[in-house]
Image 1 (cartoon, rainbow, N blue to C red):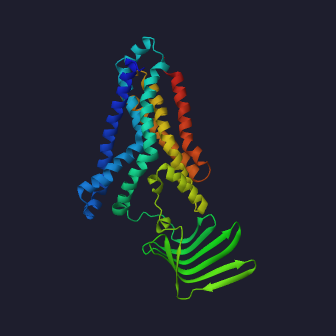
Image 2 (tube, rainbow, N blue to C red):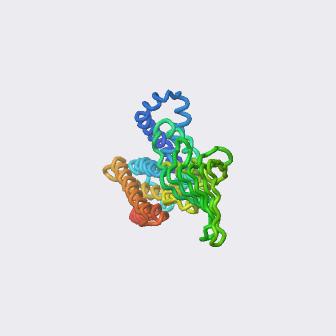
Length: 362
């Protein structure tokens, strides 16, 4: 059962958190709008569409990204006020242990972390899909990072393709090669001067093709000449398109399947996608850690008051972000595993939180 003290602290925590979310969301929208307003005017986009498709989802995105920082600011904000009014001293003098005093903070932080966890894995990726489609269509049109030359890709475990040049605008490939394997044994391959997407049931049309088949040491060749060959492949033009933020718009269940498929196809590095997958769970856990840190720092009454506590909180938040970027860079460059790259900052700050609890005012 929640006591009066529990309800009082949880109410202060959640109300302060919502206030911080509102203020920073408004600031973020104003800054982003000032940067992109010219593109909206040039594209002649109606205001309702910009608000619905972009800024509604932008607010969801920016909150998902910064909720741990918002949680720390919120805890420091209202806990400093409690300390300044000597309420915490009265609570401790009434016989409430510091560990018991932590309980409503952890409950409030746990509620926020649970919402953040569900949002990170499913709600925010779906929201990002709408936002990023709008962003790539009207704001940043030339941000595709997909490969267009010398592409090697497994489209099934036993089928590999090679494309020398791919032209995204026209959806066709030049110097196309399709190879079929049985384990490590090459069963045959098809070479074509061009492969053009037909947009129907994953169908590609091959021009000037040759079909090579192997039977032991014997090879048979069928030359297509000027004839066209229609073939269905587990390949679409979207497989040649990549944005840096593709990983942000895939729900977790599909992201796991996507990572497995990319590894199967042998397409480059999947570490960025694995980092995104682990980050979605690590960030909610961060909220609990910063809740403990913020409470431990702000619960002691000091001469600097709320200003000193907020400055310390922002400094700790900046340090956490720096450490996260540093660690993720190592993971991206394969010096660390993606799991460790994401979780090391949490482990470091969890140690800091435990030390602060040990030294906190009792």
